[in-house]
Length: 379
Image 1 (cartoon, helix red, strand yellow):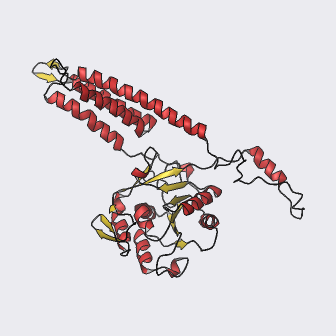
Image 2: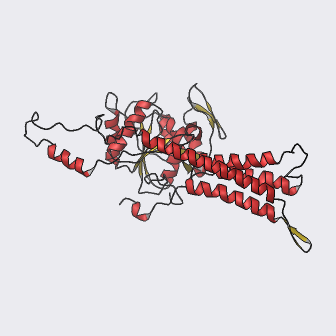
């Protein structure tokens, strides 16, 4: 979404009718709870949406809209969806999901399924079709990971209406949703839905692709004489996307740890200097200007905002916040000799409150998706 986020771009944003998104869920009802706001927003932008369920709801008699129960019809109608399907039983789920992706020429897939089997099948199908993958995850389920937040505040009523269509699973009172059966999710409906962007597998090198083409058996040739083709799932394959990359993962963790240490030290330095300088004033005639407080607050704010904008990593900003706020707190305590660096008064109170408030806002601010270029839209 420009002002709207697009699901098909590197940052999940809704960008209008050019998008064709497939949502994968375990069973009817999950689409309303996990991704209802996003679906309604996409449909409001006239994007194509297909909802794919891994299992039918009680009362369903078919694999598509024709045999759906009244609950499913009412819920998806509230979200603006007219195309939903159920994976055929006794079939390869990855092949079935890929068939749907190819049929609708999907620009992205959103996985709300909690079943590990269905998740893996959807990811495999998306990678085989070269389709971007977004996985529905709550903020508490993705601690330490970058999430993509979608603003669905204009579509909360549609989401609540969809949830209300499943009386055997939830009761809805205002924005509070209560589970009827143990194990179903419940809580307050908010104006944000969050996702993780799954990393796509690396493309096969050109040399390997050419070698595979040379080794491929020709029609009519003896299959026993044809060279064995490397399987994408072959564990000996050095380009297998499923192969772990411990050195790279270790390097990422190490870099974040080093950046967090530097941020902690910077927070301590800014906290100490700001505490020493915040009482400085400039007298201009009858007016006393709190220049020390203003400059100290601006410097601390610039440090926190700069780290968030440049590194876009909440862990690093949190380390800086601990150093900054912790040093202010320690220096505000009375020393053994009875002296204080943060005397009681308006300036001292503001200096202890403002950096904490700025840090809270910077940490809580959602990751803003980048505007998708016009050239990135599909024809």
